[in-house]
Each structure stands twice: as structure tokens, then as C-alpha cells.
Image (cartoon, rainbow, N blue to C red):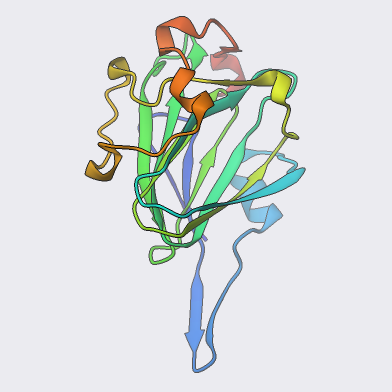
Length: 191
């Protein structure tokens, strides 16, 4: 498994090896020893699977607050997404900055989004499926979000997001400047 970092520290891009023969393909999509060697001890407690029927579906930018904050390992077994993680750790040198990547069934890449980041994506193809492991259970009481199109974030969403399909809650999230303090950056902790 190839593991790469971004200019914004925290998120990682993982590319599992894929082996093909006459029968099709095989891939080890998660290996605890390799993963924890790159990010430290992480315990996943829930797997989520979403299907977005229409291209241009936007989900996010979501996060959960402590004690239910989540790290996420995202992959796309069918279709493609434009995936985004925004640093929301106060006092972080990269606060408000983001990383983005295209995850697809073709490139087989995965994005690790640690706690302290808001996450969202836009589907680039119809009938796109997204599977993600999370480090904490879903908690509606602790769920928060940022407006996906907050101009201060500078996210260059793909053209298919010009007329997005959004959930009601995603239409009501505030701008980054209005979310309050939920995560602290700690240089000593190696964030």
C-alpha cells in the first residue's frame, strides 16, 4: 500500500495494490498494521456505505464534535467523487485550508480524514457508491457542518456542483467563521 501526505498535515492518500488475473481483481483495502504504522493507533467502530444516484450530489461538509469526533477512511468502489477535507483545528497553521482529491473505482485511492477536519464530497458520476470507516459512532446530537460553498474556503468544486443535489441540513450549515471552536491544534501532539 502506497501512502502519501498532503501540504495540509493530517489527511493521507492511500493507494492499495490491486492484482488482476483472468478472474478479475483482488485488493487488500485495509490492513491495521500498515495503517496504524502511518497514522498511529486507530480503532474503527462503524462502516458506512452511501449510494448517490445522481451526478452532482454534494454531501457535506460534515464533522462531529468531541467526545464523538470521527476520523474517516473513505473509498469509492463504484463511480467517482471529488473529495474534500477542511482543517478546522483552531490555532493550526493550516486552519481553514483544505485538501481535495478525486477518489474513484478506477484509481482505487482512499482518503484518511482525521478528527479536526470537516469532510464532504461531490459525485462525479451517477450511481456512485462511497464506503467509509469511522472511528466513532454516528451521533446526531454531535453532528455539525460547514457550508459546502463557503467562499472563504476557496474550494474549486467541479462543474457538476454548479447545481448541486443537497440534503436540507447541508443547505443550512454556517460559514467556517461561524462554527465556533470545536478542535484545538496541538503542535506537541504532532498534529
